Amino acid sequence: MRIDLNSDLGEGFGPWDMGEDAQMLSIVTSANIACGGHAGDPDTMFRTLSLARDNGVTVGAHPGYADRIGFGRRVIPMSMDEIARMCAAQIGALQGVAALVGVPVAYVKPHGALANLAARDRHVADAIMAAIQKIDPDMAVLAISGTQTEHAARAAGMNVYSEIFADRAYLSSGQLVPRDQPGAMIHDAGKAAARLLSFLETGRMPVVDGDPVKLAAHSICVHGDSPGALAMAREIRDRLMAQGVQIVSFLDS
Image (tube, rainbow, N blue to C red):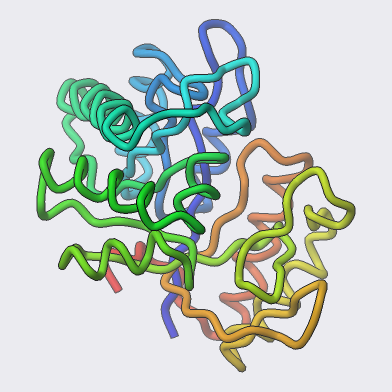
């Protein structure tokens, strides 16, 4: 079995760092890089892209609401056209800096509140997909498994790959438990790894409000900004590899 590990990186701004990007990029195989909306700036993008290149890590754009104070975790009322333009501007910004580094931006994974809204609202998902297709119809999409984002990408004939989360709890709808609810985050690396191994065996994800739900996964996300993220990523990688799972980019699998 082969699986990708991805993480949200480049989420600092100016002199402020977020997470341990250099170490994380020695563990993961795909990096979702903030592109100036919820976090990031040209220099942060350049540093993160350079580290990804040096580690042979696949690069994706991580567009989100332009809300640095809220870290892109608050929904900002916008029309579908505004959402498309916002995503296009951020993806294009990362592509521009990536050209200086000499790496391609291979996929898009929406961030935070935008990702969660697109996961349940087909109109939002369609707007994001339309923007991506205008930029590069061959660009892949990394979508939360079983969501409207995944459905919209498939309907548009795009290259779509499904992800699950190592450190987030699930609802029976297949959606993530909102961060403001108890138990939304999983902080115990051992428990997270055990849950993933069980999922890879059964294809079913435990949920907080019912029976396990069937999901698909080409990639596993470990949030780079979470406390203990680096230790969790290492634990998951080591446990998976010990069980014979190959850790490779979803675009190489």
